[in-house]
Image 1 (tube, rainbow, N blue to C red):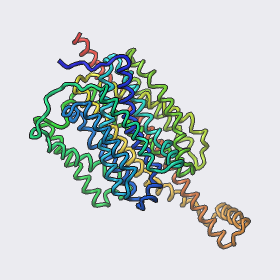
Image 2 (cartoon, rainbow, N blue to C red; image 1 turned 90 degrees about the vertical axis):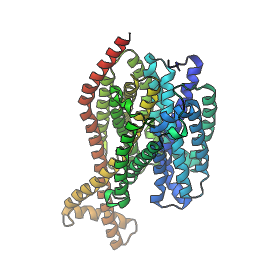
Image 3 (cartoon, helix red, strand yellow; image 1 turned 135 degrees about the vertical axis):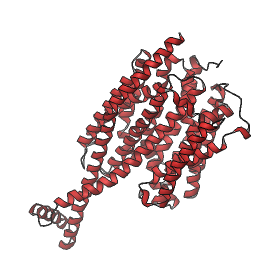
Image 4 (spheres, one colour; image 1 turned 180 degrees about the vertical axis):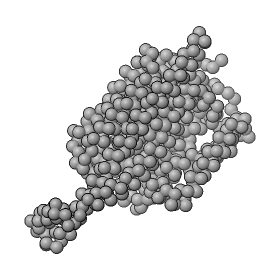
Length: 525
């Protein structure tokens, strides 16, 4: 008989807060670095290509460890594994801040990612098991606060630290939180007694190697593909083939191994299968839109990192406000598939709104209500998807299910960012060519515009020939900027349409799964 891990009173509150802080630590750290890359580049004497590895290494470490967390927790005891992960994350945060060279920092970030990957999934499992089944909607709402708000907190916090202190402090802030979280974990978190530990000879070492190769290669391809010109690069082509073959052999190995490192059979659960696909779509939208807005405001509107990050705060607060309401609605019997469909429709409205308001000089106020809608949509998507995924799982399956949904959300984000950057680079060329084809040098209106800009420069003391050259450069810059804005508009439109197209499938598939779940619970009673 599986022992109950449900907690009550102050003990449950402390466990919940500890788990949320750990989830926040991990997620904030994946986005906080973005705004500090420029300072790191100068400080460590790195190239633009090298500094990108600071993000890539963390993501690869993260995505390799996530599917293995359930097995590792069973091997070493969940409390011990969770505490060890926090310690690894905290120690390597300190080492990242003290790195003297770019490749030293990249290695420390990779190990920090290995520690961080466990924090997200294990904290979700701990929260889910600490609440009784009827309150799990509320438990996911509380956990969701960390997951949704984390990516939003990263850029403004990173911007503030870099502006007022220096880049190593974005890593140092993890140290006090990590220390407190470790002590609270050792004191309050309990480990379930699942099964006997495996001897070293029984461990699925081949599965571990294949998983690391497959997922690590895939993550590299997604993170670096656009920069390395995709399949024009031998490295990208080789790693893409490695990822496909690695994945094939990994699945074959896990289905035939006596003690698999990842229990793929848990995907026979219908709710988890649907939830895993929806987690991928959620990651695509969550990380894709978190990536695109700061990029647009900083590159096209010329905002600082702090201003761009601060813009996202009202949306995060809206999500925070929504979480307990949705948790309560689920407790009262609201259908998960209906809430997800509404969330997807609201996300479509947000994306279409973005498509309509983007210009080369959109005002800050124009974003407010649009981002509130994003906050509403994310709240309605996250909790029902997570609750649905884990709703009919028990015991060790909860950890295994959380690993799958966590990995798919992460990969969804990586796919989203990779596709968006590639799509934008291609659309940029298309729009620029289309715009320049309409700008004829002998067109009277174009000449009038160039003369106006030239006279403006001459009025500021420029020589006529230099002023004319500058006028042509200014016109070229305006065309480039307009092409970039049109590319951002396309991203918003297609992201919205993707969510709109998913709605009927969500309503059809989940309704069936939900009925099965109800029948199952009735049969048990």
